[in-house]
Length: 63
Length: 385
Image (tube, rainbow over all chains, first blue to last red; front, top):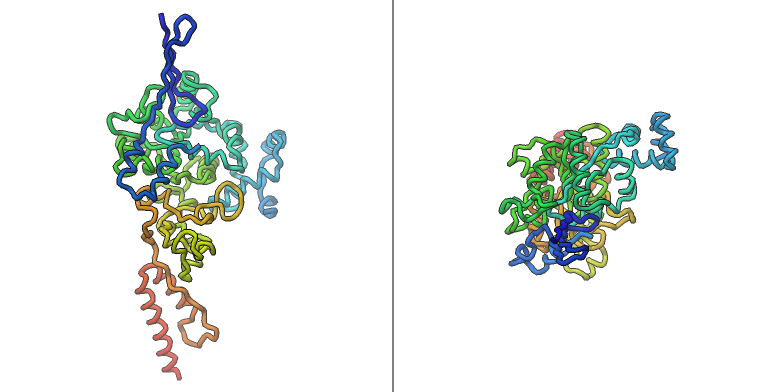
């Protein structure tokens, strides 16, 4: 019988990361990583002055 | 600075503890006095801050990250007096912070629950990042819960909330048009949910770490928030527009502008207004506080790039970068004192003062009033003669 382990939040990193994994007989059989936050910066960029793009894309990650 | 140290004094007990911790008395008081001065407090307040900082009961702090990029935390990590490790290990009890927590997953969430239960109504909640409210708040989740529900829960039980960064203060990057996730600042979430916890906004992208630290230390010392403006920002940091303290201001007044990047004016350090600098409509203390403790010039305009108004709602991430700013205050005309002042009743000093006040308030009309003053004086002189 597979056991499901979820670690959320993953700390000491930037952003909201979640890890789910399935363990069966001491072995990881499946694993999923997922970002838990979305801002839609691609959507925000549409139609803007291209010279402004860096202001937004630079802020994907502040680390 | 030495005079301030002699005036400041803290109790013997506190001093012993401090010296046992390997911090010199001089450095410690220097830090406390520096913080007092940065907030515009009298020098004697440095000692009061020192007392509060030495209090063995460190105030609990819970840090909630929503739609953020961790830039605010990174900026805070660059502060040197105090360093962030001193802040979180000695000054406050940082019970929960996703990026800095040692434990992960369930352990981290348990630490959060425990602190919230033990310190109900007493902890400081720091929020970085905006709160997505669209589609039930699904665009940001921590431990399976939405940031919206977490803020509601943690915010309603906090003593005070510090919204760090533009995202938490007014929406910032995620709230830029068309705001795909319904990104909302903390104070607006509170208003819509009827939560009465006081909120102080420290906008900036990122904000200066010292504006945040000073607010925390003010709260620790006086058990209340510093004086705030109409947008919930501490007046000591956001009381003036950048343009007022800019080192390139003399170039603006003299009409010397960089017209494009790399031209002669740009190389000579002229004013960046015509490249779209938003200093004339952005409230912040960047030119006086600077960044990263590396000396003069360490702020956007100092490096030759126009300010884009990152901390100002309706300017940063809203107005196009290379569009002209809408100056908030009309610049008063420059005045020169007379070399041989006349004997008229209205002195040149009074005229200059009137010009400054009237000019700042009503611009061109101010010059007319001043011209009138001059005439009146001359008329009187004529009559006397």
